[in-house]
Length: 331
Image (cartoon, rainbow, N blue to C red; front, top):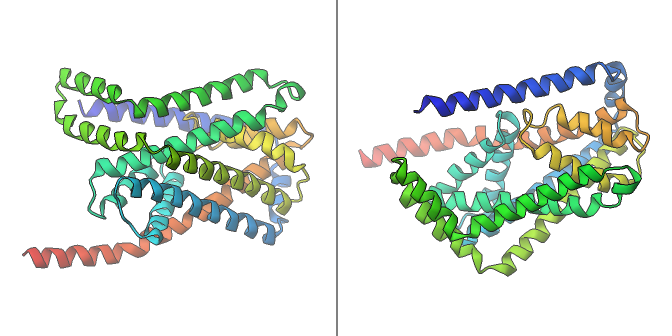
């Protein structure tokens, strides 16, 4: 039984790798790599530094969003630690072959405060949900003017469907009957041992239901985070001497983010660049410049996530020392 899920996971991962490689093979035939290398090599570092700093600020705001959710369920962690845990999660999201790696890291880090994994999971789940609904909602609004001009009616319907799905999932998470139904199914297949965890999760999620003011605040925060990340693209464009009016970034970047968030490739690699070429090509940007824009923005995000990797490595000796001290005490 244990081997089957891992086999399916390996198959899914293999499919994502194949899609990413296929997309890069397609891109390899359509862009001039010498021009891309030259474009990135001539980048203005002050603008890249601005993009780097703005992305860090957006991550700090994202950490604040998660911290507010933790406090809502009684998890009290100093904000500096929350920022550290958040960036470690970003690091694992970028360097593990699945976007859930960072979420697992955040859950395990949050439990170090003494809370249960279920309580920590509820906050990460809600953080994901709020961010997804905010991103999808922003894409619905900002992509609307592009329907007629760029003939994106079919794409817009897809974005609208994604938004509807995200809102429905958020509603379902709050609905107590859903988890009750899942519990009954698990018991029928002999997995009733998960009932206590699901009942605790249901109680935790139930605690969020009456906090409308909190969620209005968090949706505003999540929307601001997404707008800040649009301007990260703008700053990278300035760094590369790519001249595209800011309005087009609001048209295309949220749509691009929605498409990249779909689990169809390895961490969005290949999809990000390919869709970027298609979208920005509609406003006259050549393939090499569009590729350079998306790939460099991705590199900035990876560079920022390395902060989390450094924090993770730095704390290893401290945690080993704490574990050894705990064993001596109990011994």
